Length: 237
Ligand code: PGA
Image (cartoon, rainbow, N blue to C red):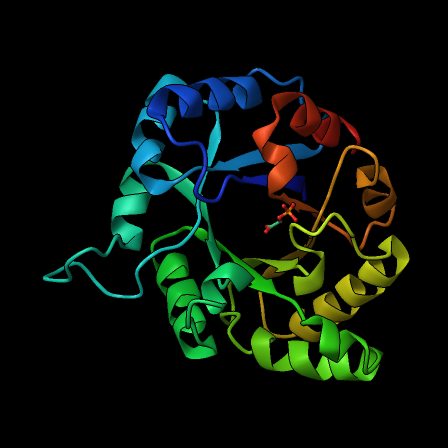
């Protein structure tokens, strides 16, 4: 299975012109064999970016858990699928901080799978839990991982909350141990699982995370907004 390097642009950039420039940078990268680059722009840009870059693998940052119908403001898996979206991030800690619950994350991941989109289910512990030790982290993650759908090809992004956007990434060996444990927990009930690491991934630390085969790629926030840095991360693999 290819390693995935996923660009999570979050609520950036603020113009379509800048988004198209950033996307063209990602589409023009020389990607090493065995690596797939996925770009997850803000939703309103997805169609234009897909049209301008037909070979770019598109992701979305969220989706509705509802079926098509009278749901003002919602964008469901069927719409994403039609736009060419292949991966969708669900349960990012920034969405959980706004009130997203595990049950919603599970419904969204299931809706994605039913539409043929691979969910990237985000899990990760807050600092207070990490300070209680590995068993506390595993207990915390176990309840979040219940949201991963059975029988599907899934991606899990392990993103310790304290590492996201902080400039302080996790220790690569410790992240790899958790990634191995997550895969072991899920393998009996999913079709396939890849575990990504996310949280202050940079060109400087990417190789250290990717050197352990338990880490199946990276979910990159801040550094994905800089074409040079993102290119260096893709080539660190
Ligand atoms: P970061 O974000 O790389 O800026 O820490 C990662 C993420 O939130 O997915």
